[in-house]
Length: 149
Image (cartoon, rainbow, N blue to C red; front, side, top):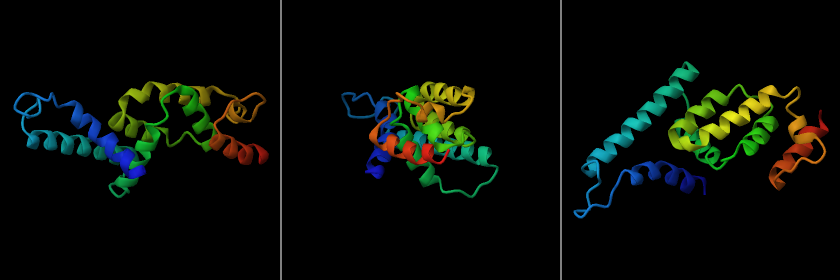
């Protein structure tokens, strides 16, 4: 399932570049041009990760797969919960890079989620307090995290 989500996340930008013109060619030129643009986008993403990590050895496929999953969190509340449960916003720069390259429309919600968690006196209050509305998966995580506070 993750592979399918990742494939879709990577194909959507390429497909949106196509106009479906009368000759079947993409609006930007040939299929080779689209492939070159995808290669350049992937290279830019890889370079941004390398700059952030300060190293050139990392599992880029795993980073892409994580970004595909992260693209499913489209609102600030979901990001606040995810980041509060993770217990560490130190990786948020790497996550943001993935979002910028895989689904840039999610970046504003991510940024709001990061700000919410960073401004909280105790980020766990966002998920452990009474009346917090969580998905069933997040509720299970919160039960474990909150019990060990």
